[in-house]
Amino acid sequence: MTRSQELFERAKRVIPGGVNSPVRAFGSIGGSPRMIRNADGAYMTDEDGNTYLDFVNSWGPMILGHNHPAIREAVIKACENGLSFGAATALEVEMAELICREIPNIDMIRMVNSGTEAVMSAIRAARGYTRRDKIVKFTGCYHGHSDALLVQAGSGVMTAGIPDSAGVPAGCTKDTLSAVYNDTASVERLFEAFPQEIAAVIVEPVGANMGVVSPKPGFLERLRALCTRYGAVLIFDEVITGFRLGFAGAQGYFGVDADLVTYGKIIGAGMPVGAYGGKRQIMECVAPSGPVYQAGTLSGNPVAMTAGLSQLSLLKDQPDIYTKLNETGTWFFTQVESIVRESDIPAQVSFCGSLGCIFFTDTPVTNYETAKTSDTAMYAKYFTYMLDHHIYLAPAQFEAMFLSAAHTQEELAGVLDVMRGFFLK
Ligand SMILES: *Cc1c(COP(=O)(O)O)cnc(C)c1O
Image 1 (tube, rainbow, N blue to C red):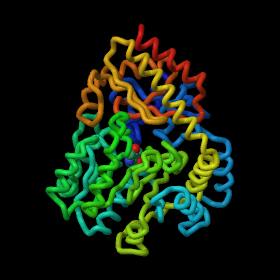
Image 2: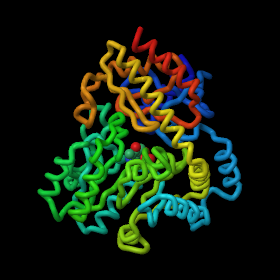
Image 3: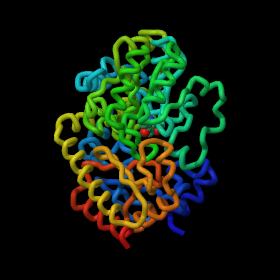
Image 4: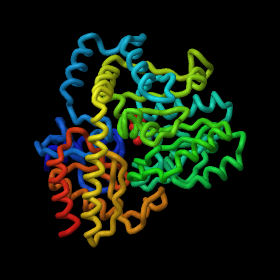
């Protein structure tokens, strides 16, 4: 038995499924999860001393690679000042000022502790502002694990084969309406049916929790127009795309304005941080300036803010980092595409900037239904092959591959060679 296996056996006795988040359990690909001891740059090392080139990057936060020296040093220094005060700090002001200054449509922002909390709070703010109850989400889009949003939520729920979670009372999801990603007519029908009742439309501007699914040209623009026409709040869930497609996230990348934006992952550089922000008139509804209650004992935690602010400052100060990341992504995934095209294994490569994935299907993927045609058993084989070659991918079909600035062209060329071994053998 490896040390990872030994630890996993122990974990299963005391942690549900042996993990603190379902997709880590390797449930959908079989085998036992690697217990990670440490990570540096583009690599992670497990408890048995195996090193992997990492394409999960903590599910996105480590856009500069693991254990970035400047971020690490800043965090160590911050720890010397105390871990939490439960009172306002200069760091929070700096963080909010940086984001409001650099990102269009963010007039005000509130820090929370996770992406889930950010989305849950943004929905509440949108409902409080509009005094309406219904929300529209897209099947296959994941917005965290709060009750109202666990409706055909993609990601871990998708591979687990659970359409909706147990333990969510029907009352909690009765105001959640589902639309089809990339299908504006499905949204129009909902607005026609409930013209005065929809508080918000929430969307992943690039779907990244049903595999990677890019918005068709005009899709996000049409959502913007519909929300404006019906007085609903357009929420971009940028927990993955924020500070990844560019500093201004999907709003900047696609040139579409949202009313509220949610952040997570990159904003905390690996620490538990989320945030929601947007138009002043909506954000002023949030307590204590308005009647929408939302709070957090550890929100804006000084150590977490230091990590996030250090990473965001590094990203903002080198704007060509995004040009490079997006170019590298385009080059890499185009190469993957050409390997897949030569192969007998049915597969589709889908990508946007530094996010991408391979769907094991003949069907072009544009939404949840088409993503679901993927052969997850083939993904399991592919995953295992790559892991055996020391390449760590997301242990599930319906997840993204995250490139970081720490992946060199040379390393990526090596990955392509390994992929050739799988697809062209
Ligand atoms: C990860 C994710 C969330 C949830 O964030 P957590 O920090 O895991 O709670 C919400 N929305 C999207 C788009 C995500 O990818």
